[in-house]
Length: 265
Ligand code: MLT
Figure 1 (cartoon, rainbow, N blue to C red):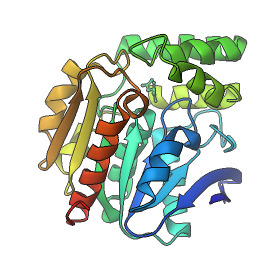
Figure 2 (cartoon, protein in one colour):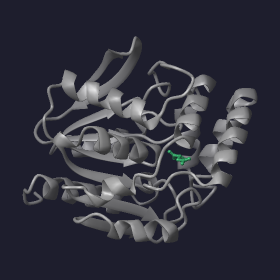
Figure 3 (cartoon, rainbow, N blue to C red):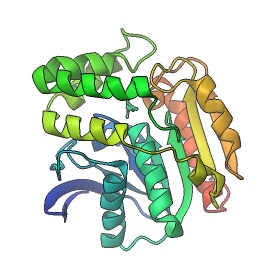
């Protein structure tokens, strides 16, 4: 069921489906909650599934000119309070993973597991920070073209039919929300320390063809958490839920049961 709430005077859209143990799916940049539609449909047969349009994206309004990962995590936390949820697993795709890590730092009490889906605890390199500024300019001036090109770059195969699906899904994204997210990602700190002290299981999903998250650079951080595991996708780039849906869905289901210390059904 789609719902709306208010966070810092901004209207925020989220969805809440299914019953049982809760799993929170956080989309990446510049996506929205519909990126999870297929996963949410299947997962909500076994779990309660919450998806959220992070501030400035999808139908959620902007809060300021920079949406830090901490601000987005606070927005997620306010929805967790509104729903009175006390135990949940967070799965964050890319930027959603940065938000998941910020959440884990700020509000670790109720977290039972964290999945970094094509994401990383490392901050942006100096080069990447410059790219964020270039991307912000491009997004302001040529929003539609920026969104199209960005989507195509996320897949291993540029002719993957899901490129068009993603382009359609993000076509209405507002430039102000795009820039606020880019600047927020640029400012994020290293969160390796969060991994080091994670009391809960952490699952990393990495794609060998990913142009955004270099799997070889990210691999060593999978050794940091006391209870870490990794799924390495041979043929996927940055969009494992489209490029390798069966494997990634199975891994997330199994991981969620493990986080709640239950046997997979
Ligand atoms: C994402 O998919 O969320 C972004 O590409 C992540 C990033 O740019 O660091």
